[in-house]
Length: 323
Ligand code: UT7
Image (tube, rainbow, N blue to C red):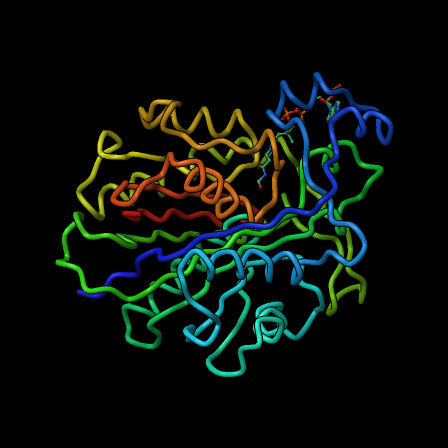
């Protein structure tokens, strides 16, 4: 059986770090409120010349280096983003060109904060279906550029960055002892589209628009939706919370992360948390967190790793993989 195995990983963050005390100068907020309600202490904000494509390119180069590969070895590039450099073409073709790759295929997927989960699921389907042997999966965002910097209920929450992994076809035995993606569970329900959206777009206002969120409403649904797709991943593979080495969640809010882990009986010392450092970087948050925990030696080859996310749409999903 063909499995999609992680061969390399990498990340890139804008140079500029913005602390909560700097936020206090912009809007009526406090470090205490932000830390207590979200766990966020700082975020990176893209400066001049830093874009979703430039951050994605840097993350991609780091992942290719780690894999010992070049762009010539790739078949497909998939970028998860809701903040593309342009309405079109896809940020993926922009990054493809920056990498000097002129073969294969490159395209974006748009599932907001669940984007990286959707992109990994898509890459895994391409690899298992025999359409590609190596897929570069990138989550890259510059949410700072779609924030309303006068709205304290949203501007304190988000940050910019990019992370990437290289997935490669390898032969497995078909059991959960295999390295690679073991299952992907995807869900969406557009009935919730007004709870987290951008109030502009090419076909409506002709403008880019700003992020709008009913935070409390999103929060209310988050833990239930996350635990639903995690339980679905356990059911699909016959695994349990006890088998997990690491939970690498989407990093939106420390309270959502802790609440989901508690509900599933996953000890907090098995949960990778980077929301304090990066804020919510939407589709970039999981690959950024993977990069931190794999670089510092926490996630090791053979570890059972569960990824999950929930966000605008609503979309939600999980990926269970052996590193
Ligand atoms: O990644 C996509 C998914 N997104 C999420 O997962 C976000 C989900 N939602 C959340 O994380 C939380 O709902 C928030 C962090 C956005 C808000 O936390 P909360 O505990 O739900 O607060 P709240 O919205 O109920 O607001 C509580 C109070 C309000 O004041 P009143 O009405 O009680 O007087 C807000 O006006 O906090 C006020 N408030 C703030 N105060 C200081 C809202 N934003 C701020 C702020 N600084 N930045």
